[in-house]
Length: 118
Image (cartoon, rainbow, N blue to C red; front, side):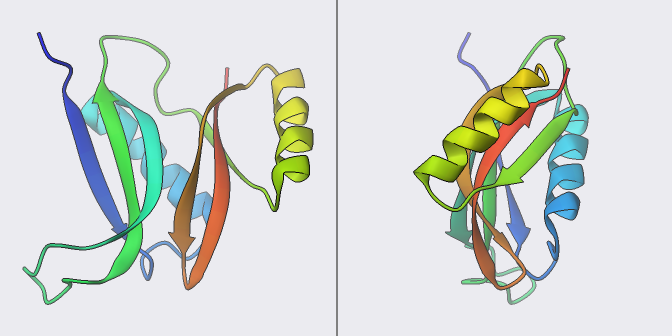
């Protein structure tokens, strides 16, 4: 059976801080019974509320059976050196790097690493 993937779009104006994005992604993992696998800058294609072209973040989730869902740590990094240092720090805490991505938080573009906690 083909794996089920779902993409959720979060408007930048709704995501005003990194903790809000983190909680939003954790909640979606549990609701969708899916793990987050990617995050990127995107523009809305939905014009239901006049939002077409609105900037935000597209998060991709893959359906799973069981597993550790809803416990994420989103960490901003500046450059490759900073990413290596922060990755090492989180891995020492037994957190697993899932992927690197980009997100819109308010009006700012953020480079992020997404870790699984526990």
